[in-house]
Length: 216
Image 1 (tube, rainbow, N blue to C red):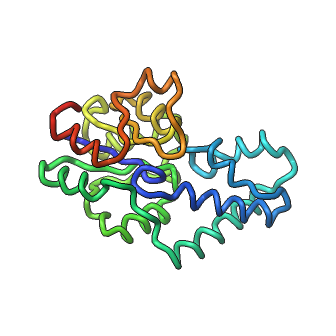
Image 2 (cartoon, rainbow, N blue to C red):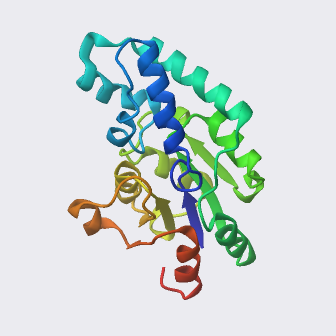
């Protein structure tokens, strides 16, 4: 069995931190609290999300300034706080380890951030492959990140379960040929996503029970 995990909103409750970060950065650069942009860019890398920012704010904001203040907030926050872990993560990882599943990470976030969360949670050694947004050319919803993960796992995409919470992440997994499973965080699936996912579960413990029953 091969299981690929998203990070933000799936393993860790980081999306709420990004709302705070973009509220802070938005006020610093003079566009006001911009945390709501998290909902418009779920699952995207920071770089890919800038196109959405451009559509929203045009020339009213400076991309480099936004990046600077976002990173400033996140670094300070993560130096002083561990991000809350989503319900069922440890239970699911323990079970998958017991059945000798191959585990990987496919995250749009930068590698430094992903590794910090995994190390803080004591789970980095669970994953044989970690691919982040700064390691591929195109961000989710493009399939690149999942194709890269499967290549490094040396596994066919159709044999890989992808756990995601966002539309962009689920589309990325589906377009790569993986089996997308949704565990919602800030966003509930629309009709397009309901057509492509193999299941939707309330938390990672529910995912464990479904895998245990052989339903995935």
